[in-house]
Amino acid sequence: MKQKLPLFLGCFIAYYFFIHVAVDLPYLVNGRFHLLQWPSSVQSLSEVLLRALMGFLMAWLPYRILLKQHPRRTLLAVLLILVAVPLLFLLQYWLECGLRNTAVRLRYYFNNHVLYVLLCSVFGIVCFFVRYTAYKEWQQQALALQHRQAELSFLRSQINPHFLFNSLNNIYSLVYQGSEKALTAIAGFSDLLRYMLYDAEERVPLEKELSYIRQYIQLQQLRFEQPVDVRLQVSGNIAAVLVPPLLLIPFVENAFKHGDLSAAEGLTITVQVEAQRMLFYCHNKTGRHEKDSHGGIGLDNVQRRLQLLYHGRHRLTMNEQNGSFTINLELIYA
Image 1 (cartoon, rainbow, N blue to C red):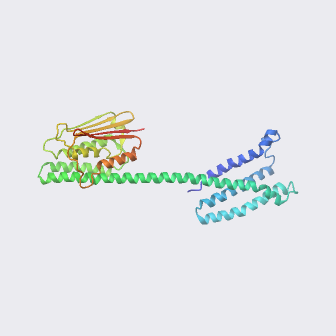
Image 2: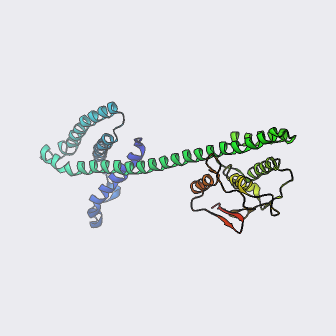
Image 3: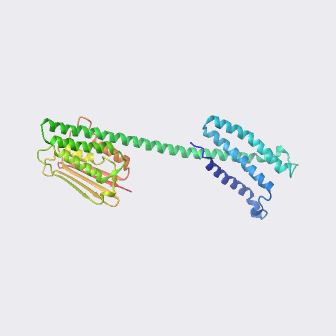
C-alpha cells in the first residue's frame, strides 16, 4: 500500500481549514472577525504556517507508522518528526508569546495545544484506516479477478485436449480405412489447431468463431459416407459482436458426438444477432448418451465459462424431448 503523500497533504489542508473555520465561526457570526484581516501580519502568517506544519507532522506520524512500509525509512521519519515537532512548538511559542505576550507560561501554552495535537493525530489514524479499508477491498477484487482469469484459462485449456482427442480419433479412423479424405482432414485439423493455439484473446469476432465452426463441420463431415444435412443460418450484424473463443463449439461438438445426425432432421444451427443480444440455437436428434472416456467435459465446461463471463447476462436451456436435443443460448451484451 503506497503512501500517496500528495493526497494525504490535500486532505490535511482541508481538515486544517475546517478546524480553523469551526474555531473562528463564532467570531464570524458576531462580526468581530474579518477574513480580509486574517492573518493580519507576517508574524500571524508565520504562526499559522508553523501551527499547520506541526499539525501535519503529528498527523503524518501515526499514518506513517501504521503503514509499516520500509521499516528503516519509517524509523528515520519517526525520529525526525519527534525532534521537529518540539522545535516547531517552541518556535511557535516564541512567536506567539515571547514577542507579544510574555506572561503566558510554556506549560500553559502546551496544555492549550494538546487537543489540537490529538485531533491531528486522530486525523492521521482515520486516514490510514480509510485507505487501508479501500486497499483491502481493491485487493479482494484483484484476487477475485485473478482467480476468475485463472479458472477461465483452465477451462479453456480443458477444451483443447477434449477437441484433440475427438478429432485425432476421427483422423485415425480415416487413415485406418485408407480413405482419401484423411489428407483433407489433416489439413482442416491444422487450421482448427492454429485457431485454438494462437488466438488467445479474451474476445474474438463472432464471425471468426463461426468460421471455426464451419471448418469443424467440414472436418466432421468426412466421417460420414453420405454428407450429413447441416444447416447453419446466420442473421444480423455479426461483425460488430465479440465473443469468448471456443464458446459455441462445444454445443456443435456435442451434436456430432452424441447426436443421430443420420436422421432426416440432421443438425440445425441458428445464430441471430440483435441490438443488445445474441441468440444461439442448436437442434438435432438424440443418439448415444454415454460420456467419453476422457470425462465428457464439453457442456459442463461451457456452462461454467458462461457463469464467469456472462453472470446475470445469459440464459442457457438444454432440453431433451421426443428424441430430440435442443440448446437455446441468449447472450446479453449490456
